[in-house]
Image 1 (cartoon, rainbow, N blue to C red):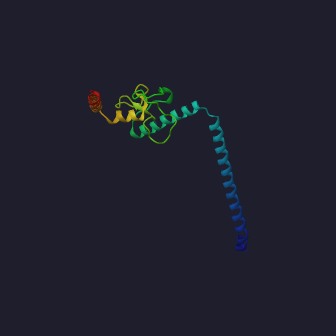
Image 2 (image 1 turned 90 degrees about the vertical axis):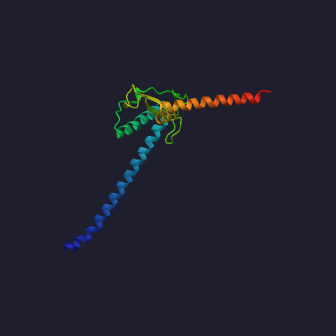
Image 3 (image 1 turned 135 degrees about the vertical axis):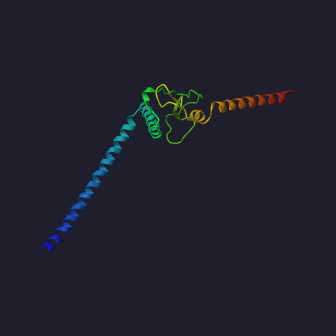
Amino acid sequence: MAKEHQNELFPLLKERLLSAKAELSRKKQRDKERRREKRRRSLKTSTAEQFMNFRKRMLVAKRRRVARKKGIEFTVTAEMLSWPTYCPILGIKLDYLTRGRLKPDLPTIDRVDPKYGYHPWNARIVSFRANTIKSSASLKEIQCVLDYVRRVKDEASELTELRLAP
């Protein structure tokens, strides 16, 4: 008798379980759609200034994660930094809107003295290009490149003058 009772209940339990799973799935989908719609509305109403502030906070948060992994002190917040329109080293306009690809005009947080961590007195916003040049070259190497460029430019101007002379 007990076995017959189980055989009668099993299809009912299975049906209820499948029904509950389907309802849960529909609820999750509705919640997902509501969140997506709320996000769409908030993005439409956000201003360019709000977006810029968001990008600045994300840049600082990303650098903080990298610094933590490397064991470097990080006490800077987005509000503590000065956010220039142009790179103070190269003078190129910084692109705060682009995400993903590393481009020369992307803003990065530079440590003035690499011996110290990211502190308000030691952190500056510069272009990715300037930060790469600064971090991968010594002062002597930069001076050598500068001397070379000046020498080549002088030689080129002398050649141009000789060609133009009658």
